[in-house]
Image 1: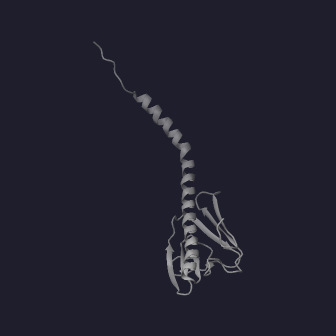
Image 2 (image 1 turned 90 degrees about the vertical axis):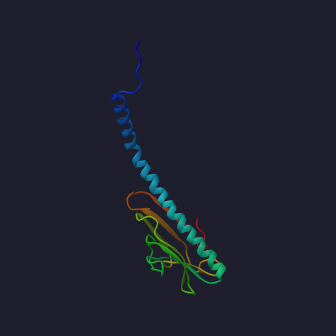
Image 3 (image 1 turned 60 degrees about the vertical axis):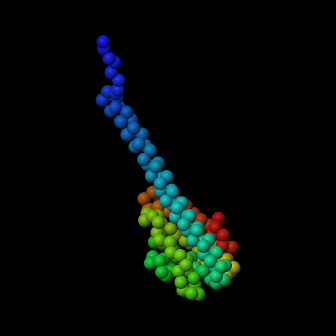
Length: 159
């Protein structure tokens, strides 16, 4: 009596592994782009939450609150580059309300506003009358061609 053998030959396993390797070679660059896009969206979400926190705190405290770039998490840098982190700052009390450290080292965050480098919200939650709006631009150092923009209207709303 003979028994029938079951299983895969070494040749069959080698072919399957080779096919999977080729498929992964095509999928890896696309996967990296998805991961980078998610990093950029996470940074945009954190910045947006800081924006809304600054507005809310200005109304709650009934005094000016500033959203500004900060490398040390204690004071404003007076710079457009928010890549090293940012803070929500009580202008009158000279006190940090919340510190936002950098999230991803390869993500570049720049804020361009027409009349300065920082966003200040008055006690009504709006920017000063001379605020002309601006754009937050998020890019990545290693993946070119990806850009995420948030527009800030004169009324102090993100679009």
